[in-house]
Amino acid sequence: MLSKRFIRENPRLVEKACQDKQVDPAVVKKFLQADQEKKGLVQRIESLQARRNKLTGNKKPDKRTIGKVKELKEKIKALKPELREKKKEARKWLAEIPNLPAADVPKGKDESENKVIKKWGDVFKPSFKGRDHLRLGEDLGLINVKRAAKVSGTRFGYLLNEAVLLEFALINYGLEKLTKEGFIPVLPPVLTKVSVFKKLGYCQQGGNKEYYLVYDPKKENPQERANYYLVGTAEHALVPMHKDEVFSADSLPRRYVGFSPAFRREAGSWGKDTRGIFRVHQFDKLEMVAFIKPQSNGDKKEHRYLLSLAEKLVQDLSLPYQVVKMCTGDLGQPAARKYDLECWFPSEKKYRETHSLSTCTDYQSRALKIKYQKDKNRLGLVHILNGTAFAVGRIMLAILENYQQEDGSIKVPSVLQPYLKKKIIKPKN
Image 1 (cartoon, rainbow, N blue to C red):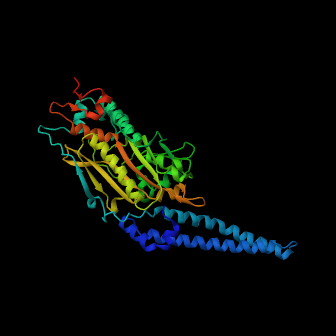
Image 2 (cartoon, rainbow, N blue to C red):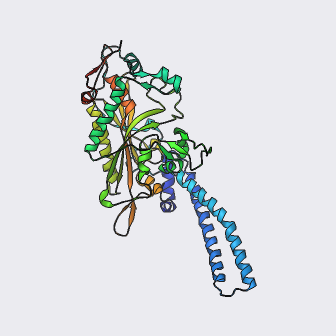
Image 3 (cartoon, rainbow, N blue to C red):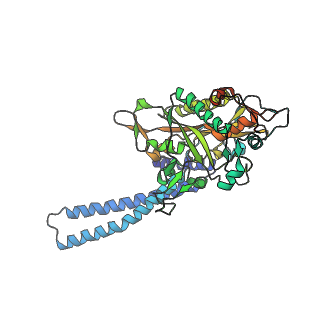
């Protein structure tokens, strides 16, 4: 969330940021009104408490004084529920206000106005009749969506044979490269408390429709604090790992690489990518998260560093890709700047998103109270960044399509051959 003080002092700037992010700027006025009413109630209660304390300071209060104290207590008691509701309302509107876009983010209303800033590699255009990932996967005995549909429904798939080995090869390769860079490997929980998940900033503006809510059998109410969300990426459990903690200044930057399954409802995407397993409800992901000190251009430098690592991993696989800088209208709630990395898919003759990398500045750390020791007497909020190392399923599909051979076999990228112990995946009988 943003600083309440910053919003009070810069309402026009925050409203402009809302407009740029395609969020109704009225949310700022709603917060300021609720905040002002809350402050008014606090002042009234404090005034009544001061009067009560003054009266109770008498050693021997008379009957009239006792009656007056009782009257003041009743007034205070009557105002406290109203204050609780007004605080709740102010928090609600505060949470709906998105992070401000960074100054270098291009203006735009939606993904159509994102900017391609880099292309790498020569796109693969097969001289033979190419196959898409599902045809390749089925012919090679690597993917089965029909059986998954019987068990789990649409947008699921079974990975079989070398596809399983290929997944773990990607995970091991990614972990090997990133741990050499100083990243701490983590296997995080895949369930997070509703109250914690909401502080990440992804539930606002209808974002909670993307994620699966898991009910405690004793708490059949989505708003109950005892319920959980399944993570949509390891980031959702890695970021709040340091909730209510203080880093020492010399321990930053702190970088993690987490592996977990990811669960997405893909709300609003029905009809999109229904063939194969490009867009599914469950997939595995290797995710980077960094906690850094806020410094001049620090976020930009760290953001470029994470992007460079994602690019290096894809370059090592020799997959053609482009880097896209997201415009203001496609940033999402917590991000101040965001890059997507899109790999080439020959069957579609276009680039498709495989990586996403964001800086959320102090938007998440303020809500989660993640701080660092600025000096002996002062604490500051850390800045938090995240980025995909491998969305394993999509990278695997990109490998199948870009490494396919005329006979239907798949070459194994050279950097993954030591893990699979083979150079080529051949069709099964």
